Image: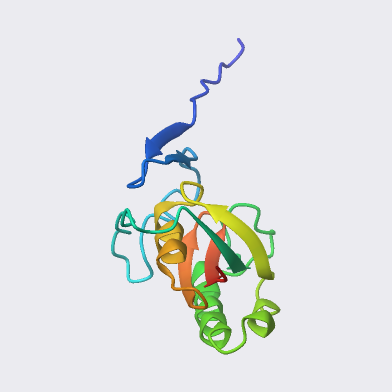
Length: 148
C-alpha cells in the first residue's frame, strides 16, 4: 500500500497596510516569531509604518531552528548570546555582526509581509539608525539595525 501525502497551500493574510503577508505552514519551531522578547503577542503594525526598510541583520541559530546546523546551541544559550550581541550592536553593529552565526551589517531591503509578525513588528517599528532585538523567528534569534 502506498502512503499518500496531503499538501496544503501556503496561507496568505493581509497586514494592516493591506499588503499580502505570506506565512509558512507550522513546523518544528512553529511558535517562533509570533511573540516579542517578553512573550507578549506582537501587535499589528500601525498603518503609518513604512512599507519597506533598508536594514542590517544578525542571526543566532539554536537547535530546532530552520537551517540550523546539527551542532547548534540550545535555545536558552542562543538567547543569552543574542542578548549580548544586541547590546553590543547598539554601539558597533558591524563588530557585533561578527559574533552572530550569520551577520550582515548592511543586508538590504525588506518589504512588509515577508517576516513573521514578531520580527516584522520589531524591524518596521525601529527608527532609522536604531537597533532592535533579539526577537525569535523560525530561523533563530534576529537582531536588526534599520539603515533607512
